[in-house]
Image 1 (cartoon, rainbow, N blue to C red):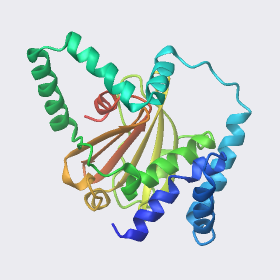
Image 2: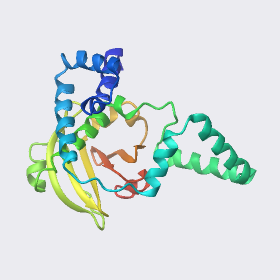
Image 3: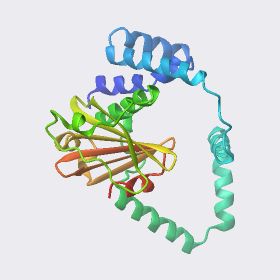
Image 4: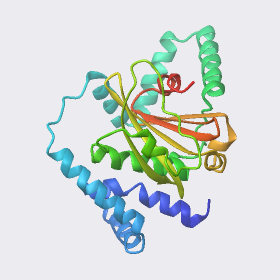
Length: 252
């Protein structure tokens, strides 16, 4: 990816924080300069501001104990986190347990196509970046109001296969564009969650960094999981606020 593209991806990541007034003066100035010449980021800023206003009208639910614990953990100074983790490991870890953890981690990486810490951020993969942005837009507008598979597939030159799993309810479909290519969006209700599926031409998946290097790509960020794979002449993405291993069961 070129330096200009990397810089664009970095600045695009700041749009949501800019809309909420959370950037420093230097970051705000840099983004304002970027917005003068970037229609895409200006549209994203409008979306983020609309979403913030919509969320501001909704009553805020209480955070769960586990969420509060994760936030407190993230807010601790790194030295304290390392000290706590070290104390835990000294008290409980054994050579056998450590070996088991390594085996499970290696198996998970092989099974789900996870990358190590040097892997490319999702914002730097055009297809994932566009899919996550489109997903935010669709959710901010409460999705198109109906599911119409015949209308969705009309004119598309790649197959679109709706998911068929117990408990999945398809409630919305729409056409969009991801990574410069036509794409189909489908939204499902599942176990009280929303699962969003995107289908694109197979070549779009193959051309993406990281995605084209493994039969199955899985990643998560801030509790949101993304699965990508090639299947039946097209590429499929799934996005939901569930662990990747749960999302994987819906597609394999």
